Length: 160
Image (cartoon, rainbow, N blue to C red; front, side, top):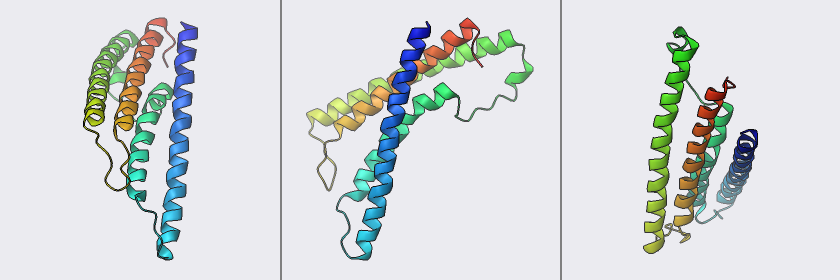
């Protein structure tokens, strides 16, 4: 089980690196575009590139956020229950989360296929949109695996 969890962590760290690269690119592109606008030479399509990168940053950081438990959670009432009840409730919520993430992943891939078949592209630069939908579908698939890992950690007694 440890090798499986370590493998998923490596995937999450790889995804975090992609998100950080996209975020850095967004910052640089925004800076260059603003400076270019001052001199009357804005970058065509900068807004749509930044929007696409923003979606990728969001999608690629969600799994690592859940892995590290750095997302917002409200467990005020959960702390009142004994640990066995908390564990059961955590497992139930993870199962619901897995179901929702798999639905989001499936629909994102379905949308991506529609984009691909319809040759959907962005407005200014004519960038194909299907890779973004496929990437987000993959991110939510990884998130469902992260939630499954949480269940394994809860059952193994190593959940924090």
